[in-house]
Amino acid sequence: MSNYITKCTIIGALPGAGSSIANILSYDIAKKMSKNPGNFGKGTQDGIIAAESANNSLEGGALIPTLALGIPESAVTVMMMGAAFSSWDSTWTVLFCL
Image 1 (cartoon, rainbow, N blue to C red):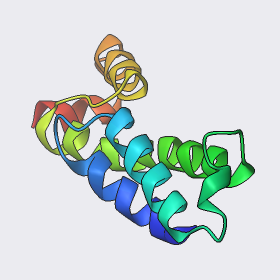
Image 2 (cartoon, rainbow, N blue to C red):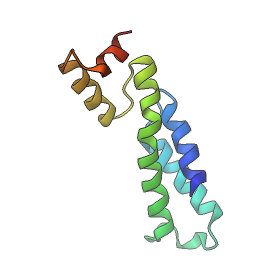
Image 3 (cartoon, one colour):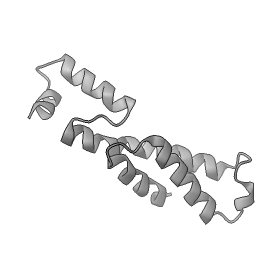
């Protein structure tokens, strides 16, 4: 499981790489490592868990270009930037305006 999370966090840190790339890559890795790859595509729990863990681990990596470059990677980071810019006395605003 940590193999999926590590790779998808790295994908999340790349500007322009979205969640669909991480989901597809994680699903493919899970299918290759599975004892029963024929069950994939039929609702097996391993495929669902792989795609969802990739989706969740992507958000942490998406914060890296958001904080470093000011480029939001996902809807969550766009909302975080919007909240930071709406209150100018916030400490988050200091990070974005440096």
